[in-house]
Length: 407
Image (cartoon, rainbow, N blue to C red; front, top):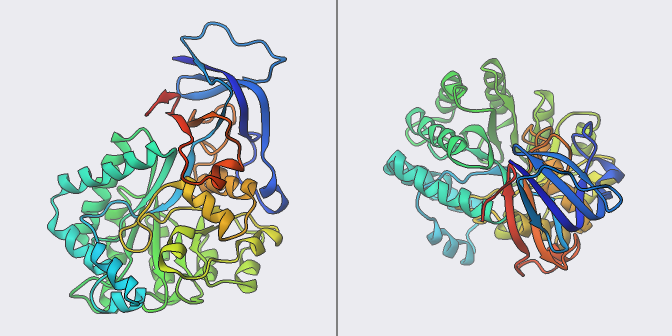
């Protein structure tokens, strides 16, 4: 199918094919083309051009964009959307002043989700999770990383990974899977026995997962635990990612870099030492402003990272306990409002750089010939400042994944 998008008011997010991420000053650059057209052929961006270039011939369908903005779909490199039930009771606990750590110590939090997931049949877990995937796609997200980590035992962790594998096959979005067995210590295990059990799970997890992750945080897992788990993941063929420095300075960034992590995520408690550790590496610092907002904790110093010449990604952390929302337009807006990123910096962080943080920026995240035609078409009158500014005014006219209309 050759689909021609014409009368595009502004085509935004154009990136050369050899650019996989943006760093430093380039974070504030977004290449655009006014009065443009774009050709999608067999699910990929085949060509695009401006008013001085003739429209392609031999197309199967014309889409009149009516002066709307056409931009790449969002990429979300950090989610926990395979879960069962709801944790709204903990919402009241938070309102009443209990901290994340206090809720976890009472058997809530991650352990609560693990108990609910254990009781939920696999088919029902898939149904609930697909509802969240479809919600995110309707909000303009075309690529999603999904973690396990609410199983906390070999049987239930594999159940989660099988569900993610089914989502890969069922969704038009591009899905990546992460084994996060070390999310918390499973019930019935000592700390040491559970770390060993996670390492033993690795070969089975690698049948489904693309990455391995660990919650290297105060009260959860240490840098020594992280080293063991990431080494085991590497032996099984899983590239590391890591939760680091959400609750305290944990050393997680440094151990992630040591083992070649594709991304280090959270970073609310980070500074010069973490920036220095990341210089010259392939690791993407990833901030999760939805979680900081919901937990009412400080945002990480994203501007400092950019000023130091690094790139950053933004992701939703969509999960039932600390960030129960997956709208990447809202994440873009939080990046601007609470982290003081410019709209262009935050745009690059929720598209190309978030794609990089899950290893797929060669396939999506920008307007680039040869990439997936994952696109958001807006109503007329929108631009890259207005979208995060009017953060809850409907702006999407149509979402296209692989060139096909989704909503």
